[in-house]
Image (cartoon, rainbow, N blue to C red; front, side, top):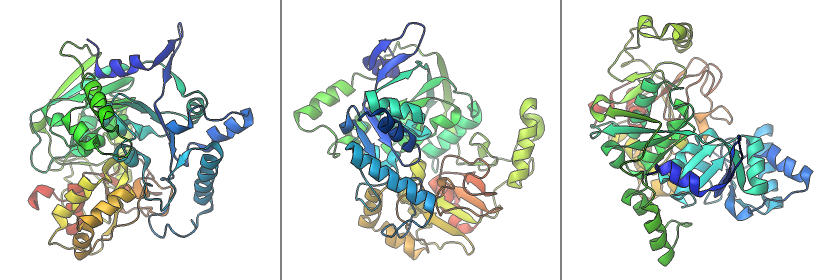
Length: 464
């Protein structure tokens, strides 16, 4: 029998070009302000309209500020990109959720929460973390700007079919261990290139027990292993999450959809190009020490010694340690930090804010720590307030900001200063990713919260 990936892919094949790529039908295209302008310009130059505008949804997220969104964006480049997306959406008749719109947010947070991302779909966006939507049981992947134009014009794309990999996580996760820790663990084992050329299906008890939001985090980080995307078989957790969402099927259509979605799971005899298994018991809360997401350790572990690193990587390993200001063999627990960032398409959902609040509740933000708590959407922001989390966070000395990509990347006002350490729930820790010279330590919301109230890297299990 076919894998989950094969079933969705095969259903969307328009034609296979001999000795060439597959023409694949795309159900949903998401557009943000950074990677779409050139695609829209090319359509105008060619005198084309969008083939199926109802399948395309646009919103700004990368460049927008996380405060005073009711005012004009001060940065000229950011303002131009946001204004251009709005103008293009209006010209081509596309759904547009602008700043301050109640449905605005990070596109990879809004898609699932609106029920725009559904099981069995093919979903693309000019953004690598489109892999997030695979958690719904969809084939979702990032594409380039020329491919964005292709989908706008034809609702199809030319793609080589990837290989398939299944990663099974056996057993249950321990206290304080989250989906983010699972992803960081897998990256450290596979490296940032270990899944190159594959679409990864996550399976096993630990994955089945994850919430929908945990699965979204796990699939979000698939790209950081080099994978084309990641996905999880839809099940009752998926269906419970999607029911009554704005764009989810209703009534009899819902029942028909669920019946179909249940058929998507990989069969017991499905054959993958690669199979890997890991034990949940081996995973503890994790942090990164270097300048790519694969350079990570368990929070109780030490920075590796050079002789444990592959000889071909030692030069870059030492360069990364120099940039971060760390030494081989160093334990990072107790290391002073300056900034904490909770948010991004990786960890900007309501469950992440609940986790953060569970640690800081009854405590105070450490002196000298700047914390940016940024919801992934206005829907998340409203839920934070409805649950009173904003008041609990304020009592601990924290402020909830307005939605956006924020400090995930240095494309807006939320930049970490050079030389400062930031414990971040985002997805990448490259040199300069959060600001020129910034030192990023990737972690889960629980680890971020523990750092925020202690002012240093702390095992969250000590505060739980």
